[in-house]
Image (cartoon, rainbow, N blue to C red; front, side):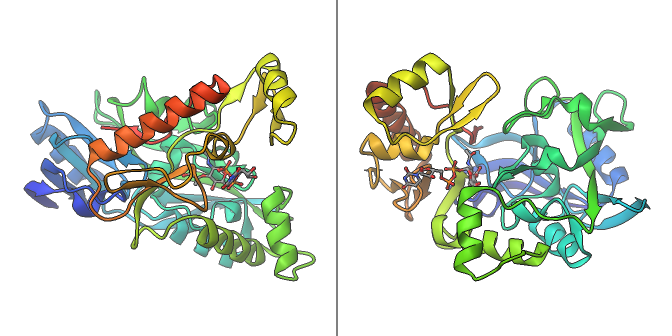
Length: 335
Ligand code: EPU
């Protein structure tokens, strides 16, 4: 077990902000996790993956907890599917590289998303028409009240768009230790998301294999999203809002080209389009900037402070509100 006290979080958040934590610990087993929890019983605890969806607004007065467990194993197999259990500390993209190689379908559209398996199960990551919840079978987590590892069926996690119970009511109760995915043998990939269909035809692929889909998704993400090594960011800063039929009709009467996805209970409008149309592309505050190629992303161009990022985000929200009367909600978690 590795504990660093009064240490910088610079390498633990993809915005590259130089905040500090009282302690950062990496556990290599569930037993080590239990020992840490006993030692830090009276401190705030923040389980963290790769810190790719988080904005540290100040130093963290508690323990930042990282899983050093990063294996995956097959549990059971039927003719159609395989249950794969992956440790919370495994990088999602390493898992996806492995499952695509094994010919197991279901995760390929989520290729190249930063972050760990545990984080993916907390926030139900999604891209190109797929969400983690579509293939999560169950989640194993340490209950901080009893120190037992419990097996939570996906249905109990209340998954929704970028949401699970781990984000609010279960936040201080469970620490995810592994996630069980149900992946399909010989599955035909879902490439119906418009941008993905286009990218596959640009690459000249006619009937895509899992690895073709992975390649196309990686190519798309590399074109649109900043490379974290170069510009700090946390991917999409805001969620795509879902508005009522009435609000949508009002917007469409003024902007006939508004993109949308009809869904139960309303219309999802790409926040990137709202931000773009509010004239926010290239907007900057200090070292924080709205990313030109995908204005849903805020980047740290080098010397941004948390205040720069928060002020820029608030400016974007204000402009979108003024122009469209829509409230954008951050996807990024403020700590
Ligand atoms: N758009 C513009 N101007 C731009 C760029 C995009 O108007 O400069 C509009 C276009 O209409 C485009 C639309 O935005 O069709 C949607 O863009 P994109 O397909 O890139 O997807 P998104 O809805 O902006 C979501 C996720 C991403 C995920 C992509 C791809 C959220 C909050 N974001 O973005 O997830 O990669 O779909 O599926 O749901 C993340 O969560 O960190 C993330 C990057």
